[in-house]
Length: 405
Image 1: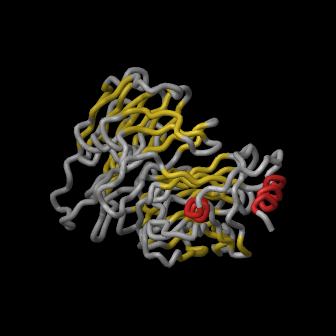
Image 2: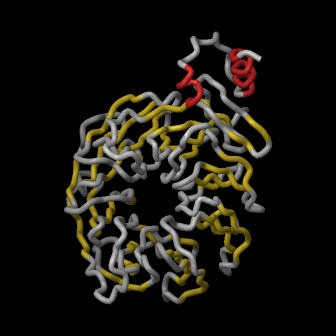
Image 3: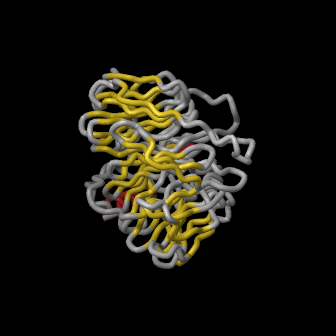
């Protein structure tokens, strides 16, 4: 079967008008451009035209493009990409470890449209809110850009690296840096509204601290913040005054890297090493506890809670009791990304593996991505909108998957 016949058949499945075959790329590019392994069979390699991505991610996808981010060469043999891509309209917003700024790419083919310049690399996902884009960089600066511009409307320097996305709500931008400082900024002009500085508990047993801090989380009038000594502190969102403090994190790394998750009257909080707990928002009484930890917050999916462990295991828990319903082992023994529930299943990546689709009812693996070359792992969570999912690998490759119609 010719390349044109394969392309034509899948183009028809995607609901696209057939196009004349283009000149084939060099052999090396052809072998590394596409690849997808399904538990039920092989589906690649293929070249597809840019698709209309409206619809739902409700079936097995195919790869429709793959590009390497246009960044300078890295000084090290390996690196990690932590900025999860964000899909908005016809654009993709994404940062990179080797580029000082936020890249704006065309969602149809991954081509670079322009850059939003920054002082240092962007290692957290941006936030698109209305006609503005908010993001942070590792110099400790928060930026606000118009969605279609390359000049900042304002910026604010926090004094220490920012490795988590800002929280934008009600005209205020909340950020937390790695030195235990939380800032509330005006979304309009970046002016400082208040600042809170946490003093690390001197009784913290672990000598090493993890390099990071979770995004602040709004829960009514409370702003939930986490710190390297394992403490979660509720601040008054309007003033930054402390409301209550609870020590949660334990083990070799008690650090709270995962932001708290809010479910009805409960807070779900995980230390990096352990534990994962559910506690009452008002009384801070613990409802249940599980002796596992991880770098990402719990994600609610129906009656289940999905938790990505630092041990490479995805767990599904009963939301009320914390009872384990199933677990899926990536066999990588590496940290998983934040799980992304879709109509087709749960998308999740592994730092020493690839990206997988997991059955939400049974925990069985439905398929994974196999490009046929060294992937270098996935640390940033996939982005899904419509029939398209976009994944950034640690090697700096951006891969787009589309579910055929």
